[in-house]
Length: 240
Image (cartoon, rainbow, N blue to C red; front, side, top):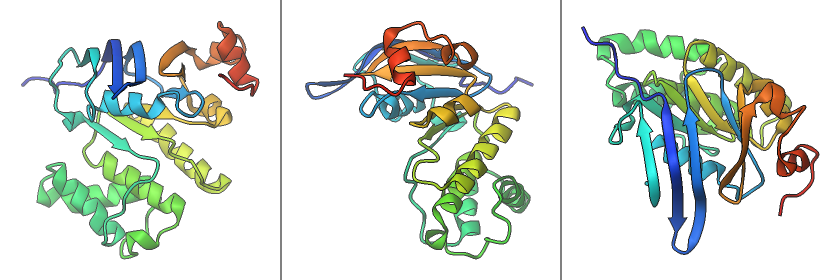
């Protein structure tokens, strides 16, 4: 029996993305490999969301090459993404997860067990019959994560997953991210919170004006940045 084909590593080779005359990403080369979370940081408009969407396969490169596990035409069956403001379906929490399980091709006989597993993992127990749109912001974000994990992805992209959440809800989401990463799912996420980046990142990618300024392990990036832009950003100075 063949081993399942993985979408990792995801490799971007001299990639640019343009919208009209505006360059959203410029000459980006990056490898996203299995391991601890990769965290994208940078000011507003740096290109973090564009990079996530490109690596997910939602948009195409204007120039350059993107490969998933060595393949250029890999369908996103092994990848999942959660946007900063996920859309909740007009149905219950459990029905939202059931919909995601069906869309992921999970056999009907296995869905109940998988639903309970996801609800336990995301701390959604007791909310099965609650309308998804009546959940709190933190609960909606956990539900969005449950739907994304329904397809058992190799890689999970998260766009500002704790934006606008209170500290308790933020901790809940961060705990889930740690658990997911320990289970072998590659997490690639963006954040404006440098504290969160320090808590979660295995490696850091600093973006500015669509370019990768610096990459490296979080344990060395924060205490000893190699570029002036990284030093200034870490110190809270504006990058212009």
